Amino acid sequence: MPKTSLELMQGTVAVLILKTLSWGAMHGYDISRTIRQRSDGALGVEDAALYQALHRLEKRAWIEAEWGLSENNRRAKFYRLTGDGRQALQAELSTWRSYVDAVSKVLETA
Image (cartoon, rainbow, N blue to C red; front, side, top):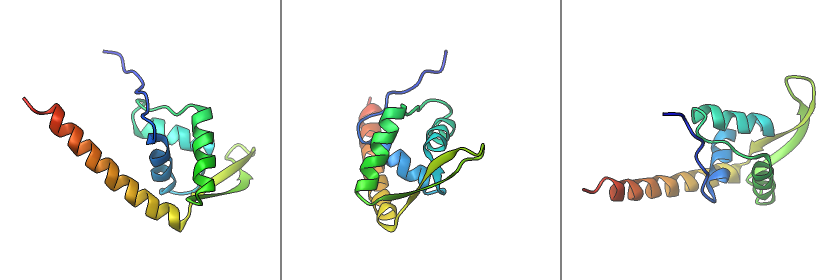
């Protein structure tokens, strides 16, 4: 059976970005690539959705950005988690785990 991309639910992109940035500062393309790789290609984040989410997270002060050079010497904006972002990530992870547990209970019921 061919592998297909899963459509991301609203709110998913933000928590995926926060989790990805918990591993270190990255520019937008690296964030998107990491999400795709870690999900074995199942999750892809469209550029528009990625950058809209990054701007929302930056406005909330959950991430910060600074300009730097990418691995191919191109100018890129690098994003990193703030202290508030780490706290938000923990809260979001707790919510997602509860959600996944609840959905699993319903789906696994005979």
